[in-house]
Length: 273
Image (cartoon, rainbow, N blue to C red; front, side, top):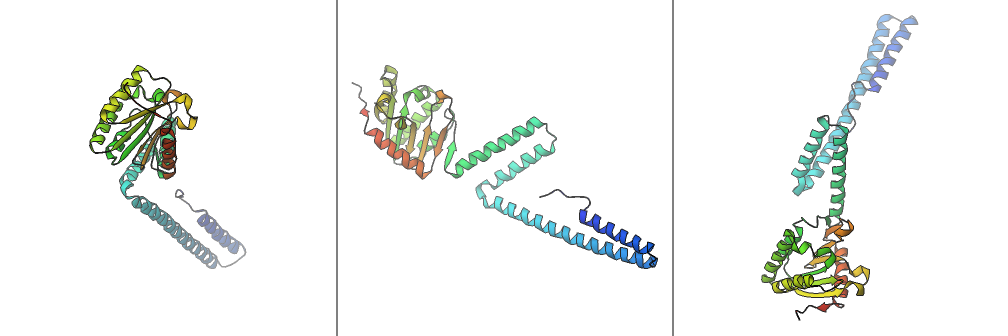
């Protein structure tokens, strides 16, 4: 919506024309009363037209406002969050903030918009080390969890607080009857890796492994499938890449189902011997 103007250009032009017409009639010898009357009539007509134009603009603005309000209301679960967001942005705009604050706010809104664009496609970016979405996905699993874990990504993670909570969620899932399978991708079968595998076998996870040098690059990505309904995939943090995606996109899930089946046929079952 455009900002309100104190004087409408049409009103100014119409009034000026009425005055000029009155002056011309007066100078040309016309009766003064008639000149004034014509000028007044012209001004009144101009004012009426201006009022009608303003009313029409108000109707358009009201219509736009109703459309925007209804769109927010149609969001249902997010209505209050959207109104709160508008309140916060309005507070920032009206508090005479400096340019840095304005630029930062705009950047934050752009990031929110990009994240929502991903969500609308069934994907979520998440923090690999701190997100609880992984644990929630395990807790909600009903049938099976199939995972691929490159050790160069996950070796430290299993020892972290979130890694331990993640394994505990697997223990509970196993008690619910959920089938658990994890494929470790290795460069070498070290003692540390054996201990990680042994711990997960005790939980009831079916563990197998493959050597990365024997695999094509497209089968070396870390991912987890939950009931074939949810997917989490991770690109190595050690490469400085934060592309950790949680997805319910059917095309993503189908692709990684195929990758898991291909990979499983190339693995070696874990044995403590």
